[in-house]
Length: 253
Image 1 (cartoon, rainbow, N blue to C red):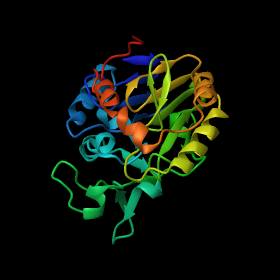
Image 2 (cartoon, rainbow, N blue to C red):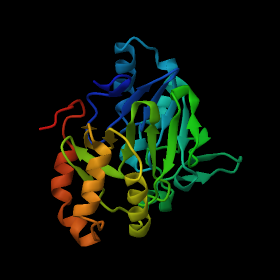
Image 3 (cartoon, helix red, strand yellow):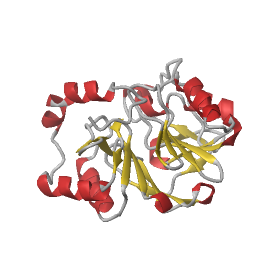
């Protein structure tokens, strides 16, 4: 479903959101759960492009609900996976793969549906990806050490992963998970509030279309502090129900 010209929400993927960006080449923002690859490929063909046109998979952070489909997508498209070094782990051959900063990552007991996924390019602060109309990488640690947002400058679209969520009408903060740093998160939101963007595409929920940077500044003015762990987990059941909504919806209701 096209949100704004050249920016699509891939339909039919529950729990987390996968976005498709059209430029000189195609890019995916996040890869979704393990079963996402076929739905992404189907949607790419539906808009008249080929899977081989996907040049990048842009990882916002390394949590499994956002990256489990990446390896299969790389195999089907040949795309280069872009992730921040702080959400990766070095390999003996000098490369790196995505690393989940939580129980699975610490145990190194990779489950069959979550094999190590190789990283093709580091997502460094301020880097531009010219094949995507100068899409800018913004390091926003807090939710995880390597969380990043991607700013599509020409189209005023910000992809936030789990750094910020939207239900289409208002913005909300992410829920703390292992690897969360409250101080870093506070500073990252303040930095985003200094930027201008019209559309916000979060890792869950529905895109915020129109006035998104103003909505962020309103959130930080009315509710300046990130939630404590206790507050976050008291809200978790409602957030999980919201996140499980239809992946193909672009409704503001």
